[in-house]
Image (cartoon, rainbow over all chains, first blue to last red; front, side, top):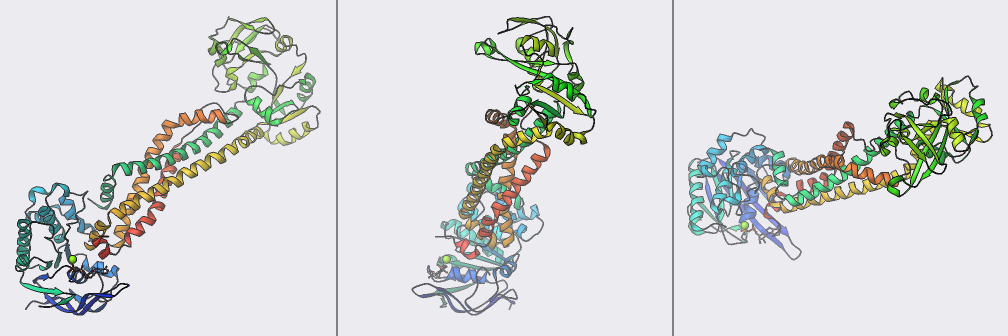
Length: 222
Length: 394
Ligand SMILES: Nc1ncnc2c1ncn2[C@@H]1O[C@H](COP(=O)(O)OP(=O)(O)O)[C@@H](O)[C@H]1O
Ligand SMILES: [Mg+2]
C-alpha cells in the first residue's frame, strides 16, 4: 500500500446562514494514498466543491482534522495554506479560468513565477505536448476550443510539479468527446504516478477512476 | 513573461478605459509641469530683465511705486517729472559708480498698427547709458552727432517693425518734426528693443520739457551700500528711490494671487486624475476576481497579487507622466499666450521654462501618485479569499 497523501478525520464545513446552518461537508473521514485516482460524485449541492476546496487547502475546516502531504492543515491561516498549495497541489476548474491576455504557453508558465522558479520554456512546451497542444502554444485562450482550453489548464496545473491534482467538474462545460479526452489525459497522468481527485456528476466518466466516492448532503454514502 | 508584463497585458486589454485614465494623468502632469515651468520661467525672465536694466537703483518722481515699477520695466520710468537739479545733486555722491539720466515721452501715432493707432516710445538718453548697458551694440550706424541733433537711434524691434535703416527720416506726429535715423541697436531681448532713443537735450527741446527728467539709473560701486544710499535719498522731497530687488519682489507679489488660483487648478486636476486611476484599477480588479482566485489557487501569495495590481497603477501613472510632459512641451505655448493676457507684467523671453529636473520630478510625482492610488485597490485585491474569488459572485 502506498503512503497517505491526504488524511482527514471527522471533517466538517458549516456555513452559518441566517435561516439555518448548512453542513456542506458533514463529518467526513477520508484517506487518499499516493497514486490514487478518486472520483467524487454526487448531485449538485452535495458538497463536492466544498470538499475539494478543503482537500486542496483552499478553504479551512469548521471542525475535524486534516493532514495534506504530511502538513497539518487544520486551523491554518490562508498565508500558510498558500505555501502548501504552491508547488504541491494543482487545480483545474470547470470554467477553465485561463488568463485571457496570455498565450497558452504563458498561461502554463504562470505558476512558476509564483513558485519563484526559473521559467524553463522547453518544459512548458513539453507539458503542452503531453496534453496534445504542441501546435497551439502561441494561441490566446479565445483562439482555443473549450477542450483545448481545459487541456491548457491541466498543463498549467502540472507546471509546478504538484503531488496532487484537484479537478472540480473539469468537463462540466465540455461535450462528450472532449470530456473523454480530458479523462484520457487524467488516466495517463495517473499511470505516471500523479494523485488525482476529480469531482464530476457524469457516471460514465466517474467510473474510469480507480475509486469512487458518492457524496450526498455533505456525507459519503459509498 | 513576468509579473510586470502580466500587469502590462492587462492594461492593454481595455484600451479605451486605460487610455482615458492615462489621459487624465497626462493632463494633471502637464498642468503641473506647465505651471511649475511657468513659475521658473517667470522668475528667470524677470531676473534677466532686471539685470539688463544695468542699474541697481532708479530714482523717479514720487508716485505709486507699483505703477513706477511696471512702467519702468516696460521702458518708461513713471511719467512724472523731476528737475535736473536732482541729478546734479545725486552725481556728487562718491558711492556712485555709474549714473545715467533718462527722459521718457510717449507720442500717439495714429498710423501705427495698420491705422489702429499706437504709441511711439521716445527716451532721451545720455552717453552714460551705454556704460551702464555695455551689451547695447549697434547693428547699424552709431551715436548722435551732437547733444542737440535731430537724430534718433532705434531699438531693434522698433526699427524692424517699420523697416527702418540708417539715413531714414521718421516723422513725429503732434509736434510736426522729422528726425533722422543715425543708428540701430542690436537685439537685447529687453524692452529697450522697442524704444526710439534721442539725445536727452533734443527730447527736452522737442517735447518742451526744459530741465526735466523722468528717471535716473544708478549703479553703485559697492552693492553693500545700497540700503544706506537708499535711506539717504529717502528724505529728498519729490523723489523716490526704487531698488531693482524691490521691483522684482513687487512684481512677483503682483502675480502671486494668480499663482494661488493656478495652483488650485493643478491640485484639482491631480485629485481628479487620482480618483480616475483608483476607479479604473478597482473596476479591473472586480472584473478579474476569478482570475485573481485562480492565481491564488496556483500559489500566488497575497503579496504577488498586491504587486500585480500595484504595477498596473504605477504603469498608468508613469505612461501618463510621459504624455503629460510631451503635452506640457507642446501646449506650453498655448498656456503662455493665455497667461500673457491675464497677468500684469510679463518678462521678455521664454515664459515657460521646462528643465530636466522639473521633468524628472514630475515623473517622480506621477509615480508617487500611482503608488498612492494603487494602495487601496491592491489591498482589496490581495485580501480576496481564494475560495470566494474562484467561485465568483454568481
Ligand atoms: N459560501 C457559501 N455560503 C453558504 N452556503 C454555501 C457556500 N458555498 C456552498 N454552500 C452550500 O454548501 C452546499 C454544498 O455546495 P457545493 O460544495 O458547491 O456543492 P457541489 O459542488 O456538490 O454542487 C450547498 O448547499 C451550497 O448551497
Ligand atoms: Mg461544485
